Image (cartoon, rainbow, N blue to C red; front, top):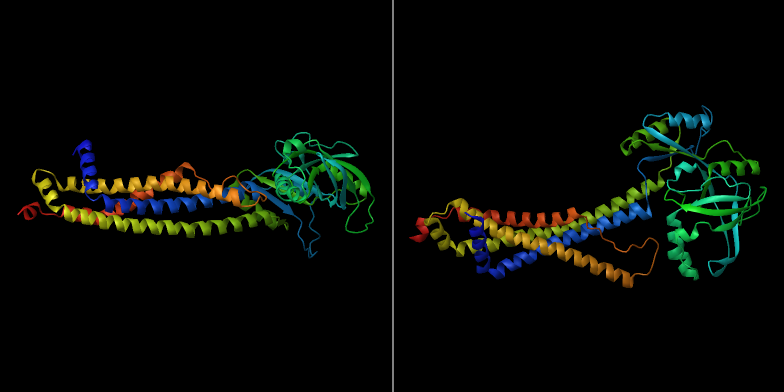
Length: 419
């Protein structure tokens, strides 16, 4: 049968029971739309989690000294010899040393802050990191005795803009505006109580932002941290952590096991938190997506009923069709064509409906949800494969629903019907 003739017969067949088939289209569209809506919500939430809230580089393993040491074979420490041993592990591409500034520090700011008067004090945690650890950050080097360059986390700026600044009426800031900004830091001083460290007044200068910077403090050059610890008279030779970069993310678990075998611990609290939250999002998305699949299954049953009724009412038509030379395959293709047309139209409508529902949800959230850190412009993600999935689910539901009607149409005996 020619494609043009088949298309004409399919259109004529669909017009015979337009109401029943329209209900089937609505059922397929509802199921596909619900499925894509929930999948897009899960993908969008997962993307937000991985890229902005808890960004984790799967290639990085952070080794830290154990919190508890039994002392049977000596204390496990991160010195230069140990760093070289870790760097020689199979699969390690690069190592980055970290050293905490082992003294309290405080910032007391009193003056103009981008056009607003600001007076506040805050504890500062500083960690020295090798400059190569921050990709794309320039001028991250030791600037001398009194000025220390710092790299901040973009997440810290997001929290400031959407929480701290909004509550206190302070200006919202961007990364470019903050680069070059200086603030006073007094090393050896704590706002929580007296201490016995030597006090060193410093100026901290923001030189850039990096997702790898520590969230709860500031990152400074490793050599600056080493010099400050020496000036304070505290240990300036041992490292607080060493970050190992694997050649490939697939090698990271094996490297982590070797690090543990050497007596060190892996600081993966943020990674584990990201995995737990991601798993919760995936489970919720899966459960809600099952609802969409259930609607698609009901739509498949509806298609089977509608096509079954159509085949019964058109038995004489199919008999004449067979009598003039059509084969059983021609009849099967005709019924399948009608079913696939229903599934294709329903799937396309479901795709459009899911996109419109996501747009409406984003508009509703933007209008009624108060600003909060990491609030995205959209909570949904629609990669191209998701649209293809919607069409595929619609066609599959129609195909499954057409199996019984096709079998019935093929088994019709033209001689008996026409008699």
